[in-house]
Length: 327
Image (cartoon, rainbow, N blue to C red; front, side):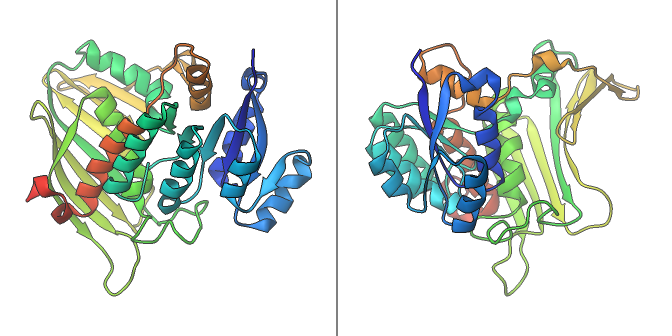
């Protein structure tokens, strides 16, 4: 079996995480990290300690020119996704991009069109539908455990933003940061995967005055294609604990996915009980599916079209007046 030569742009938290995934026994026989790129020479020096044989660059174009690369993983801030991806597509390199796909609807659309024209595998790192709790959630919904869905609530609450482990220059910026982009994107995509397309009806976002800082609050009304209501309530800089959850209300019961992976359910009139979720349901890591797709094997990936559809909802939530369909 031919080894897939993979390169990584961006040696932050996610870039290093993906390299560790590639080095796991399950994948290491199929993929080799041949080159990395980061704008920080300090990051490259640190990386070289444990990976002295990996070629390192500060210029991604130079890396793409000098190496024969099968797959490029992009883990740079959102506003740099577009130029890096488009350079890879020019060279017909398979691409695996972090979320959100782009920094605007226009960029996301151009990336989708470019990837389709290049005829390469194009994947976005949407991991939530692969989580065992979400796989179980989808099973319960398909089995109509709670009957017909009446409405859904999505709750995003953060005592501080960014979170303590998430300190960088861009994640607090209005241009490409904020919890809607960083966290909301996971839930938007998951809802669209499990329940169907979302349309934004109304969105009210509160930003700090006289600053380029990201949002502090959002209240939004959305709906699924069948008219089911989806209410989003988000707030940062509060007392209490972080809560990132979705509650699905049905005619015969309720299902709650609390704080990413705790699944609760119960019939109408009864308390919610914790649902046992078997780890064997996990479909992670996502990289495994990307590699399999490149090899022509069955795989479950989310491509740039999924990223584009999620981007449409994101931008409608963040800036509703810019979306013609909302006027």
